[in-house]
Figure 1 (cartoon, rainbow, N blue to C red):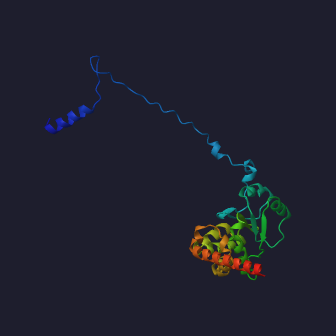
Figure 2 (cartoon, rainbow, N blue to C red; figure 1 turned 90 degrees about the vertical axis):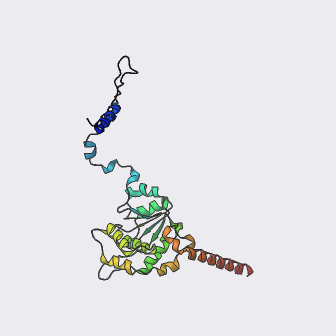
Figure 3 (spheres, rainbow, N blue to C red; figure 1 turned 30 degrees about the vertical axis):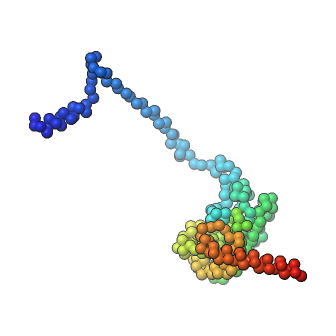
Length: 252
């Protein structure tokens, strides 16, 4: 055996556990670790369908329900079974886009819960004649941009097309790209997305909205931070104007 093999053998021998007899230092101790078995879960637990009737009463949101941004929600027309869920949202307002008279049972629910109703009735974008009036959409956006109305729920009948147009115009105020706006619109309007709705959103002019919104009560959204200096200046000027009017009234 050459020197290299001797060194390897010697090193290996030093790593081997030493068995001591009765004259040695200590006997070899063997330790055994027992791992408890993992209980098996019956496969039928996952295979059984969920019965909607087993959900609590306050877990039934309206059709097409989703959060748009903090304190703004969207959905289809609320029904009686959705009332407990809506109570959980602690809504201050509901903004509806339907043309028809608001259902009486919904009016009763709003009255009992101190919820204010804003109705901006529009017919929707349907070829070849019906389209959404821009001035009505502008007024609806002004309502949404006032945080004193929050939390607020937007809805039409199905929560798809008219609601999708209003949310799309709101996204323009939030400076979303058209690609992101249309992707969100199609997600909720599928499988009957309307090209006229998307054209309406693309061509909608947000400048009239910016002239009408109350900058002192804007929502505290990060996307509004770019106009914060203008907001502050506007509030100061508005305060000065109000003080001037009060002084003029006093002098009379």
